Image (cartoon, rainbow, N blue to C red; front, side, top):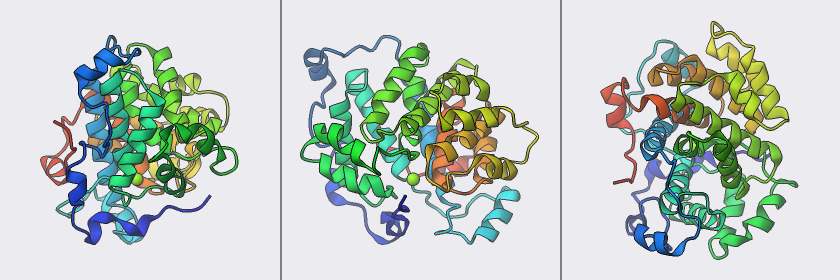
Length: 340
Ligand SMILES: [Mg+2]
């Protein structure tokens, strides 16, 4: 699978996209926008059972993890130095921690839930495409650089195009990295969590294991809100295959294991696949279910696709904790979310 387009970070040199400022909060440019209009026109709109506060907590934590994790990427730090700094729990000194594609797409999922109360797949495809178009230099993977521009004019074409990615659909970690707020949103109904996670994943990740990664993370976030998070429970709720097998290995791994060693055993996202990303991120979340800061330090120890593993862990843990306990300087440095 081709690597990610890492070197083109917008925030390294380019000024903010002025055009983007006139778009909706996360780049979506087409309607429906007004909530009341949606209520009148969309047959699936229902908000019962939705926990918007939990979803918002998860989204804030996902963005924090994404931006914090990004600081440890080799583009910004020599790996040896990064390892020493993480071991010393030394806060990255940069004044601004920008979030990446993980957060940009999670904002799109969150927006569609806010509009419809459910995942409307064509609308989600449109929001993904608009979000990418508004700011394509957020570190998107190769598959999204191929797919999302194609959806800009015809969002409904995801049905034909997503399965063609990587000859059978993407099994990357992209559907998992954006889905934790959805799990928090529907946490009261785990069957609905699974159903909605599948819908959200299919728009870009047609491979069953790409979808399984999303189900696992959404369920983990839901269980986190409920105070019931365990790796074994997440594994049990995950469809059969390599993601579930990785979670089963994670469930058997004692929390006394050093996180860097756990990442060696479980994977750290280096292969950008759901099965080498989700088990470790869920394991660190379950290791620190009430301490977001500790969870993110542990996840960063694993390196690999560290913005994404930290985004997943952050979205899961913060669904329960919110940002409480996070150092004020972290909150000050994380790029703000374009939300009211
Ligand atoms: Mg990213």
